[in-house]
Amino acid sequence: MRILGLLGLDRPKPASGAESFREPERFAPRTVAVVAGLVATVFVVLRLFIAADGDVSKFVVAGSAHTDAAQVEPVIHVFDSDGYDGQFYWRLATNPAKLDLARYRGVQLDSPLRLSRFGYPAMAWVVAAGQAAWVKWSLVIVNIFSMAVLAASGAWLARSRGRPALAGLLVASSSGLVMSLSRDLGEVTMVAALVGGVALMERRRYQLAGACWLLACLTHEQALFCVVPYAAYRGVQMLRRRAWALTAPDLPWIMALAAFAVWQSACRVILGKFPVLESGGETIDLPMRGFVSQVSYWAHHGLARQQILVVPQFVLLTTLVVFAFRSLASLAPTDQWLGWALAGATATAASLSKIVWLGPAELRQIVVLSTIAWLVIVVSNRRVPAVLVMATCAVWLMTAALRIVAV
Image 1 (tube, rainbow, N blue to C red):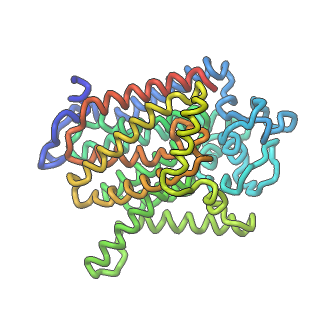
Image 2: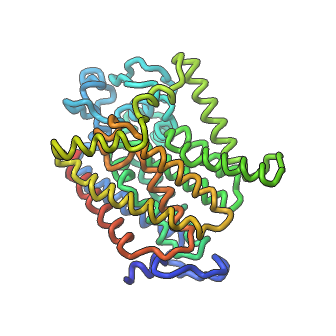
Image 3: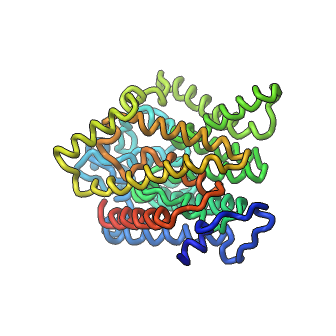
């Protein structure tokens, strides 16, 4: 129970809030950021030398179906397979100005949707100083940094509600983030920007919060599951107060949605279509039909060895979401919008089609749901069962162990 005590989850928080709460300096948010960054670095190093045989370009998981090994330049490892989404982020990061679907540096984009996920590769390009040869490293570096930022933001929110900063690590505990870190994917950056925006809103730094949410929406459309509910909540509050003027707290959603709309429109001019509309018909279905259909398939045909962990991952996520809903009543008035975000993300996750569940991918396709659920729990005034924290740690460790040995 010592760990539970350090996390501040074994007892209700002080009623007077952060002002009366004093925490040892060793558990300051910056310390939590260092811890998360070190854990991410250790994970990356182990994966690099075990699963990737010392070749960091294997994190990209480029496949021959979309990447021509004879044309790819600079050279990266190309598997004899379809590959994975990291190959498209790598292609964009080598030259963010190349905004079309044509083959470039040996990589052929498979969907216009890739161009709308611009934030993460753009950051990797900056970190690589525009040098294409360095991108295979900068993609990893950006994700490690994002993990540190995510944990620090969660830690600051935890402290502001009277919990020790170490509780912020739980906000960064999603199995989907492990998958993202292991394959050069954008979810870590997207989630870090979302949670960072929430932390900055708590500090009334609304312009910076807007910049974070803008980055999140330009990194992955999943960010809308957080931004849109907040916008809707603010709109309802204006209706109730009969006050129609937009104020500083509206800046984050205005900046984020405006940037998302502008970027989608720019892609419409370039490609002749809105990227975000390209996959909606394939990925959305009637609630639970896609998931039930895939579960039925797994029941008859079994799960592949690397997919076995979807069982404990999904059980944990379901338990987490249920507990988060039960925690909504204890949220402070300024946090009530998180209930809207939780409901929207849950409804969307339940409506994913069977094609999404064909590859569980450590539940990275619904990583925002687990993040919002932990945000609700951390900022609420509910005791958290020890079993939930221990199960979260166990599932994270199992997922990390798998990704260390499996490309």
